[in-house]
Length: 319
Image (spheres, rainbow, N blue to C red):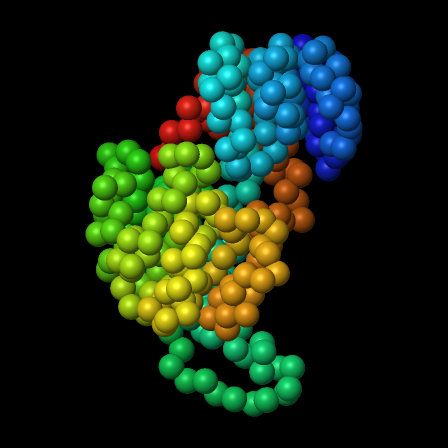
């Protein structure tokens, strides 16, 4: 089997682990992430399995049988050409990032209810000021929108902190540990209405674009907090900004945005009740090792003729 590695962060140990997952018979070729389109095309034409982010058009015309994406996001690969291509399996790496993203989300939740951004700002002028009226997560309700790998990791942490967890997913009958009530998409507004905290943990694609709409944001209870660690286009950002500005929402913690990088003229930068981070929640110091573990599991399953655990639906269906 010929395996093409186009992830610069991978070292020799990672490549050995992938060769072992392929039964020790893989011939590995490395390709720099910044290689030209012609270099990608030539390398892909000689490979069966690839680790990297190839151009979707190159992928559609290549002989690759398995693509292992080094990211949780995969919306650019939801094309009719790839959905129709027989024999192609694409896996994302959401499982490699979900634990870090879940911790980041909870960190933003704690920071906002404990008013840490204001205390950090007070350090600049060395101002000793007790703000009073700090919140707590225990005893509050969180609604997690999207209960895939990431949403489930967030739900697990919130439940451990003593929060009541409700959730929204495309197929509400699927098991959702740590979640007391699960709603389908048609119950989204009902689900957020009683939540003190609302978390967007949705994948990208047409099925989720704009799902957290102006009406959904309006349905959130006064004083609620909103967080987005899924995909920026899933949220009506204009409506979110309006509700933050008029005080309907108490605050927001955002790691993803409709346009990235977040434009310098976005009102979100200047809002004291908003935490902005640059789409970095999943990056921990050992993320390359986590990626390798996820890839090895998917590659081994594919080689055994089983369904890889992180195989994505190229039609764009969400959980």
